[in-house]
Image 1 (tube, rainbow, N blue to C red):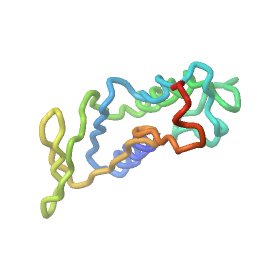
Image 2 (image 1 turned 90 degrees about the horizontal axis):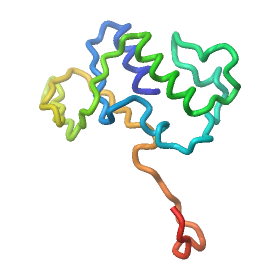
Image 3 (image 1 turned 45 degrees about the horizontal axis):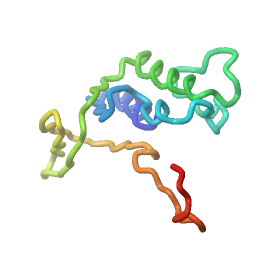
Image 4 (image 1 turned 120 degrees about the vertical axis):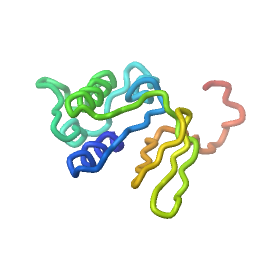
Length: 135
């Protein structure tokens, strides 16, 4: 959501923008979450610029509704998302950035890194953890 919102803001400011998405679709972490998950913030605080949740959406939307919202946002604003591209390294070279990707190098004046808070899960240590046999 943050990366898509930044992309729109940059485009509206006249900055050439390309979104590199490592996954094959938007909202991949939401696709992988459990079936009964709902957004834990109110829909009015979580809608993206220029795209509201549909009328009748519960206050805390189901994960499939969140996925639809993210996709609708990208489609509505025509965001330039390139799927299946992994950024391997970003280096600064004087007056520009070199972004090394699985689709070849890219040169950029500006780079925004928005990996999402779920890219690398954090599991805190807890008493009895070593004896727990579940996932």
